[in-house]
Length: 463
Image: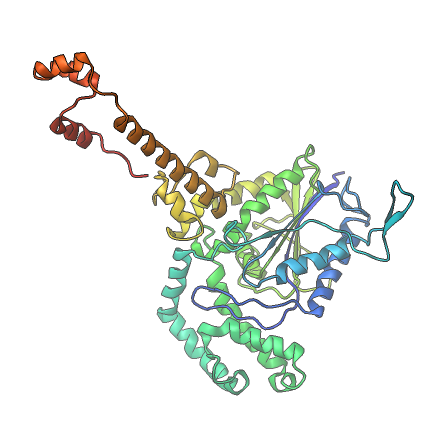
């Protein structure tokens, strides 16, 4: 019988304060996690602990009480909503592993203790948008922005706007005059009403659950188009396509018996969920915007099969989902990888191509490297395969290339400006009309016309 080799966890952050994101490019204002959000994620961690660390079907070979750095890898989106996602990850980890107690005896006879319920210190890698593209694949993605803008100008959107207008008009007194109440701004309207309904004791009764539910419906209509498509290759799935890279990479590591990794944890916003629901062919969840602290768990078994579980919010069990139209709960990991790998965005150069972006997130540097991609972006060795090159690394590469070119130009300048004066042989040749063409070449005494002719036949590539 197969055993559980390890898991990959994908969660949305917990409850937070008010938040605004542009309906045009989804640039966002920072916000803060609430105490409720901490509790939600802490409960998530405890539930995951009881199933995967201490339960009957626990992960084989994992240290359940003291986290081991080689067994757990945690990455969290550090952009968009500020520290909310990173703080949510911290709260979940406190529930996943118990407080750490230890005492150390020093050489002088004194002791130092870490006890009294203090949490374990587990490393979290906070990923900023300028470091990697996979947590926020849509940020700076021009192809995605154009798709959204085209939708806003389309007849289907106008029809949906007309259908939603009576609702948005009816809540204008609740949202205030400075907050556009229309379908284009549907996400922000829902988020405002939802936050106030949860936290504002004065406004909550006036809002009512019915208005929150209707606002949620129109927000999901909007976000469904923004972040999902039935065509896996469509730019509308950019949030999921970018996230596939760390997902597939981690699943491969967990399935490798020689690799010590047991838990990979990705803490994100709601957007990757919406895309992945479509890309995994989860019909009942397509177009859905998940609630706070929602959790998706990819279970990897020793027989190289995979099973997916999901819980929307913090209530209830983690239910099994059948992925990729499978009739079975588990599918071969090889099949899962084979079907999704073609849509994974594995490198920065690939993201630049897909997004038709040349002026942000490191794309400008890769374009300058004179790559051979179909849109002119670098596909150098270090940006291919499973090796990711972040915008930061691309910047370093660009700097190195610039320094290399500058050094080459300096060397050429030194070469030509520090030539020794003509020798007797030079003078003899000069008195003989500079001798033969071969002699002139030997001395580097090429006439201007010949030099220009050679230069035009072999132009120098731009750096």
